[in-house]
Image 1 (cartoon, rainbow, N blue to C red):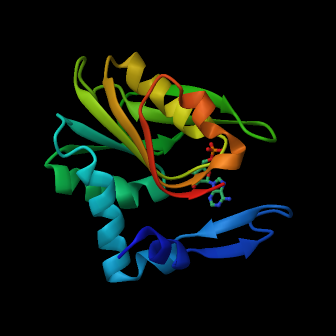
Image 2 (image 1 turned 45 degrees about the vertical axis):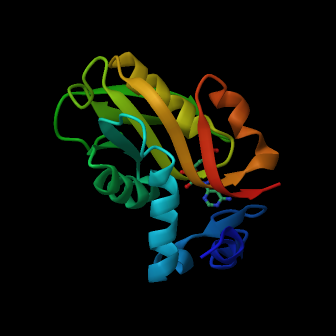
Length: 174
Ligand code: AMP
């Protein structure tokens, strides 16, 4: 399945969750077996020749791809979650949203110093969520091997916030 066909499986929902947002609904792609498999293979194949010790997925849609990519690469999986969800000791990071602030957490023993980490999320918009996640990984001493998204909204220039890392996306909206 090619990228144009993958793109056709994503459903646009106007004004969700708030007015003015064109929401990229990926559930229509996920339920399509060949499409889901193709995305996971495209995300993972890029890192097939590199050492990846753990894949970090960002709550919640990053878990769907992160878990599958970790399985494909033979790597472990580590969740980055909203505050109050992880049961063990965590480190936390706050980041700016369009309106207000939010925070993310990771278990303090989830990544060992020097481990090579691939970070996966469904969609790159402004890059704030991923930039905050990278700060958590670096605080634990992890080495970011790559940053991968299924979808990139390139017009929001999220890549600029992730300059120091190799960013890979499959479906790009200019
Ligand atoms: P950002 O921090 O701005 O890069 O936003 C990234 C997070 O918000 C991702 O985890 C996406 O799931 C979600 N997101 C942002 N914009 C959209 C959109 N237009 N459609 C679907 N999800 C979005």
